[in-house]
Amino acid sequence: MNQPVVQNHMIWAVISTVVATLASMMACCCLPLGLPSGIAAIVYASKVNPLLAAENEIGAMEASRKAKMWCWVTTILGSVFLILVVLSFVLQMLGVVNEDYLEDLKRQIEAGRH
Image 1 (tube, helix red, strand yellow):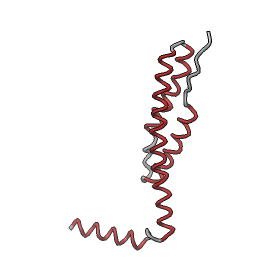
Image 2 (image 1 turned 30 degrees about the vertical axis):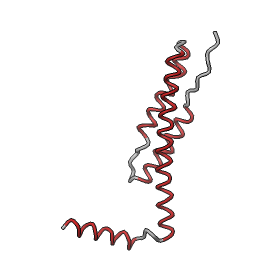
Image 3 (image 1 turned 180 degrees about the horizontal axis):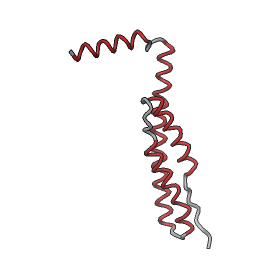
Image 4 (image 1 turned 30 degrees about the horizontal axis):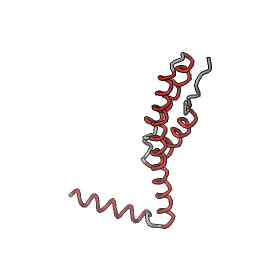
């Protein structure tokens, strides 16, 4: 019997997970915020082929749909974090955010606590 073609989205899941995790760690003080959604994408992607092998076409299609959804979530998170990283570098290069600015901001925050 011919098996239907159901995409597992594994390559997309792995690449988006790596990019989102690295970008979030660069943007958010080493917090791997892209990792949870990426792991979900990889887990669902890994279920597609075994379900097809077991001739569970509906289960494979559902796993593929969920993998695709989590891939999109991870890709969007990665894109947002990459934009934040690039914006941070651009602002630093333009001199908008420099050491003096950060020190002034720190003093203002500490003065507001007292």
